[in-house]
Amino acid sequence: MRVSIYMPTKNRLASLQLAVNSVLAQSYQDIELLVVDDGSTDGSREYLKALEMRDPRVRIFLNSHSHGACHARNIAIKAATGDFLTGIDDDDEFLPHHIAALLDYWHFLEKYETAPVSCIFPQALTRISSEQRVGLRRARVAYQSLFESNYIGNQIFTRREYFINTQGFDESMPAWQDLEFFFRVLKTYGEARLMDIPSYIFDETPRPDRLSVGKKNLITAACRRMMEKHAEDPRQQQSLWLQVFARHYGFQPDLLEILQFMKLGFWPGGYKRILKVFSQKFRWASFPKENRPKGL
Image (cartoon, rainbow, N blue to C red):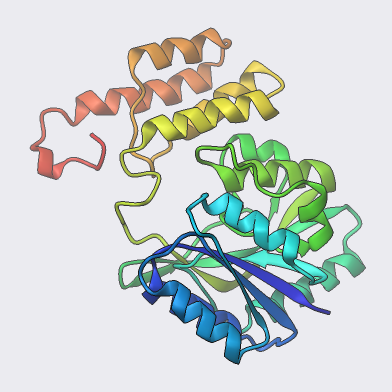
């Protein structure tokens, strides 16, 4: 039973090599790794060409120009031949038991779970610089819960046909591409289940190219796009707005955004949360800039 793994990459040769090695070192060996290079200029393409020549499990796709990570993922998804499909980012790593554990857990759920399961998402070891910690994640996630937060993370494991039937990643999304894709998968096929065994190393080391750093306009645009595609009532729209101002982004709402939020409907709990984030901007104003949280 083959498992396909897709990996988009661009100009991260050192971390790419670590990610690739972690996939090829899996204890479960019936795999194919599909790497899509999105216009690298740092030697990644040469590395990948040599790798494909010596390891038949590796298939590479080379974009002459950059089209974005979603485009790269979709290329690999369409080309995959496995029964199951999952992904890895080029700065993350699999632990050796990752694929074997996911397959075992899928078969366990298939045998004993009575409700439909759309996908599995792995427990992650979050790496920040040299430190690693196990994250806290929900055991079950329904698509309605995704209005509150992306409780899944950045990867799912499921049947390849589920990726294909839900049409892969929306390349028009300016951000939140994973979240938007998960909405469609969960709404179509049922709840997601956590495999509560750490097997995926997720790198959150701060870097200038991360979307959450100084790119509020992209996050806000993604939120509006999500509302158009998925929000069926004002409360769902408000829940998505609150995600824009989640702590890990460090963004504060302005007065116009607060008014827009309130016009969507009366929600005392939501008002309290968005006003709390807004008030933090003034609470920290008297502190020296170097002592304030990022974004304040």
